[in-house]
Amino acid sequence: MAPMAGVTDRAFRRLCLRYGADLVFTEMVSAKAVSFGDEKSYELARLDDSDRPASIQIFGSEPKSIAFAAKEMLKYSPVTIDINMGCPVPKIAGSGDGSALMKKPELAGEIIYAAVEAVDIPVTVKIRSGWDSSSINAIEIAKIAESNGAAAITVHGRTRAQGYEGKANRSVIKSVKSAVNIPVFANGDVRDGQSAIEMLVETGCDGVMVGRGALGSPWIFEEIKAKLENRNPRIITAEEKREAILEQLEMMVADKGESSAIHEIRKHIAWYIKGIPNAASIRASVFSVHTKENLKEILSQTELF
Image (cartoon, rainbow, N blue to C red):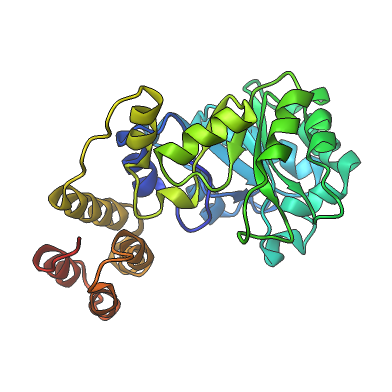
């Protein structure tokens, strides 16, 4: 399960693991904020026994703060520390973090090296194909990551300029896999079992990372595994989907409090019901309530799927 800000909180991570994800990631955590002792950043990174195995993703552009944050994250016992070098959001990339590091290969290497030296667990890196179509340099960054001690690389097959538009370039991912000797994971446009198989076959990668394909569909991991094993995927019933949403709500309330949970789960519900005939009216009802009990009433009484 890919790290996604505002999405991969503890509740959603638990669901993805239950439905077959082999590894989940936290929302990205600011290394600089951690170095300042920001409690919210530590809370984003906190892992419980119920959401493992998990990796903690950090972002930043200062080797010292990256090293400090990586070491601090060890208190939560993640499987790996993952460094974000792919986020395209202007707020992140515009500050020199995330995908902006694709434009500074030397600094990228220093950051990876700093993290590797700071911790005794694997350090992984998530990158894009490049900054834009005229600067596709994923191979260069991947080699730098490998030479500075990275244990694995995930490649999102889009440039920063693309954002999430257009198609992920599988040939770039394939070229990265061929260029390094560490595991490479493919990311971008994996939306079901068939696209996962196609991604693996076309790129030769060691695995796939699922991002937006899991939104409103945490059971995608079950489907992918069934496809890999040449099995028919299990049918997820409407009732099971409803129970998953209700459970996600309860977990979010326990983690964040009722007000924050109600506000944040609305987008998840919109993803769960996307494409059904009465989605617009359901969304309107969901966005109009402010208590857990009222939301549970709507979820329990409405034809969601």
